[in-house]
Length: 146
Image (cartoon, rainbow, N blue to C red):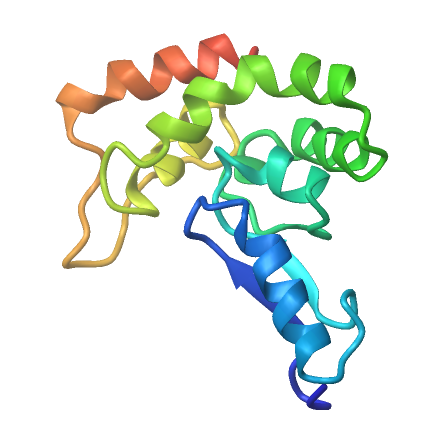
């Protein structure tokens, strides 16, 4: 590999990319697992890691760091039942945290759970529109965060 490239963030949501990237590494003279593969799509992170990925760069972890850590540990062990148990309450959050452009919904969510006092964003971004706040709040509730 290249000394300055140690990982790839794969955020398409296509978990078949794990094998494709590993195959490409092998085809080009590198070990299949020489390059760390990190999911950037919270909704498919569990399956990504089960398929051979190494972890994630997560938006959900901003509001549920412990749950996402537990999810990754279970996925790395390929404990499918535990993965399903941990991930089920997070499913709506994985989806609804993108109801508007990132980081708008997640910043509002971090404020809603009481971790910060203000969800202000620098222009041109704005706070989460009021019509979407109920959706994100419901996802936080489903995840047991409020």
